[in-house]
Length: 623
Ligand code: FAD
Image 1 (cartoon, rainbow, N blue to C red):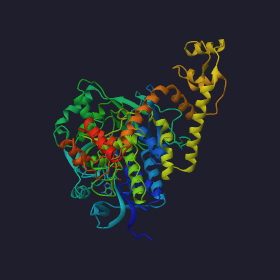
Image 2: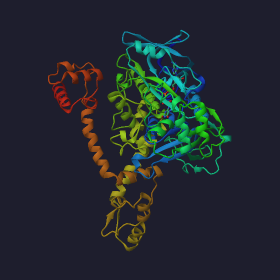
Image 3: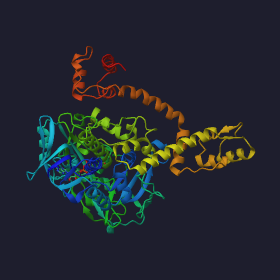
Image 4: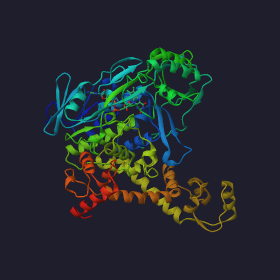
């Protein structure tokens, strides 16, 4: 019988990383405790009420495929879904949903508070308890201690959070929340190196004071596509967003406030998110731009709050109001909450193994914005992996590391723990080498079986994935063998598609490779019917159309895996290898890569050093 304050896994923080970590650990059978500063803000969306986007949507679908919750929460609270980049190739497409902020939070709260083996407590954790090199638990500001075999720390923007509105600044984890002042001190005492980053958010507007007439309406997709592979349909009413823009007048107002901007007066010293700049940054950096888009996004079906996406700012409140009122549709607008910037501590992610366990303290894991990332999706992906690995470790099972050829999640974590980052890290498709294979549409086929093996994906979903694989394979075989003769009516139809006539008998597979052909067109032309679902049709079509590229990527992956599979023991003595420079030895000793592949991605590690290492490892452990 467990003691009252004894747990297998303790998770600190119930944002996006913490929620996924706690759910994964509890679902995998661990008695789990989730400690969080405020029980009313479980899974709270600190910034804009939206999930997904290009690259980020891939992460959400991968989280879902592995048995995480973010995709289901977005489906249950989504009020506008759009697939972005539809004019580009399938690898670059990304789903984004505008969600109802309150419904998203209440969905997460319901799931977290009804999951078996998961215990929730409101508590501000101040210290990590360690004995020798092994984590023991945590203590909170009331002096109460909680003991666990593994501890996952996910405090987001709260570590020494400092909020800035103009020249006014005060401590806070986000507006309305306390900052976590003691925890970073405890981390420092344990030897962790911390840095300082900055992010910011927009003011929130009162819908009743916005004039939508004359603004461009941006509707969502109809029908909306869901994030989760298990969501049958989106049930909430769907609403449009609106588009307006800043003007020269807006920019002049912004410039007039720069002398009271914490960013431009040097008060904020943390590095900001390059890809999500504040409006004052944009106006200064792109001085020749006459206008910047502003997307007016509803915060919820019953909410009067609107989120003006594109206007993140830490300018003084009087400038925020003037700036807003210079924008079309916002002439009479009232602010409900001010925009603000926030600086916070983060921990250098190179202090972690790819399991997200810290190198300095065994069974201690860090996940989410604490690891120098920005974004809900990046945080949730890490939380899920930390939860999985903490549970596996506690249960004495092998850890799970997804590599760069398996998932965007693998790319994210490998980038962080191997290369680190000089600025808040955000996911993009361009970070992924094998993006033609790692599409958001096939995340279930790539990762569903792994999730099932962990006990996170239910039997029913597993069966669906197996069935889908079988259907796709069988259909590819059928299209490879079915042939079409160049009859007059066939060539007539091809002319209607705008493609050249067939001169000889052709397989349906060959025909489908033509740019003008789609799966449905080919099936109809051949008159052979199909029982495939829409998703399965899409998979067959992509597999055939991109077969050449896919084959090349598969070949690249085989080469990549070769180096990944050469493991380096954690206590490997680099000093003893002749031919490695002191600089290389120091870098390898600091990074402690787990494979030759990971070693090859550390900055400053030369191909010659990798060759020397490979020769040495080969001699010790023949391949
Ligand atoms: P969070 O969601 O911050 O959750 C942290 C959790 O830990 C909270 O539940 C908190 O209560 C709890 N906690 C903290 N300390 C303790 C403690 N000591 N004890 C117990 N519980 C604790 N992302 C973008 O992608 N783009 C943006 O433009 C953007 N702008 C942002 C602007 C602002 C002002 C803020 C605050 C965030 C912004 N973000 C943005 C970041 C986004 O909110 C985070 O990346 C994401 O929420 C991180 O998730 P997380 O789980 O790591 O942490």
